[in-house]
Length: 237
Image (cartoon, rainbow, N blue to C red; front, side, top):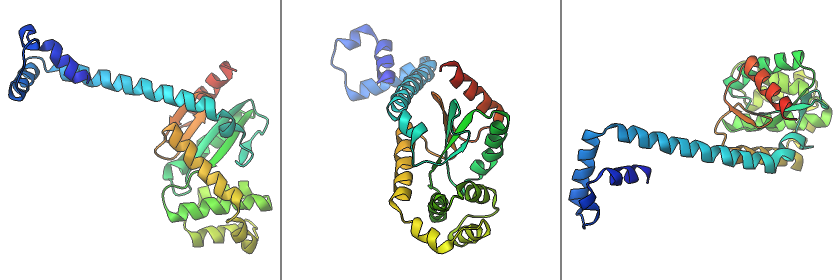
């Protein structure tokens, strides 16, 4: 619509008051493009700006509506300081190499800033192995070993699949038979379903993705960027 309006403004005044054939319109558009090629770039830039504004407005609305679920969901694992004044929400997949690269960055931040809460949203979108790993990690909470299981899965080399997940579960001291039963629990199903819903609502399309205060940070992030986001979140509280 923006491009069409731009072309309309560029047409001769007389032509706007007369019925114009489709062929004539096409010829006028082509002529306008030849004489004013910058109009296309301007129209695209205006469209992109409007889309960015719309996306920002949607994200702000979702953050307002879902803030409690994002930051205070009792069915989401928490690392760092449970009583911290700033919450980082991370959506991740155990088969995501960028999630594994981001883990040391997040850990370094929490080591330096002991007033940060990390809410983990298991978002298994890459493979069946990812889904199996997410279920196993969430089920490990019933045996008090989520942090150990999460760390082991995030630091393992190679593709994360069912066999490797169960091997790691045994290495961290989990009762495998109990784990398999707990993997089918309603709490596990609910957590993953909520992660899917939140990620879609926020417009995330890949892992890792972070929420820090009012900021959405898609993709791999280094510690300095996290520090900036945490500082900005504190400034508005």
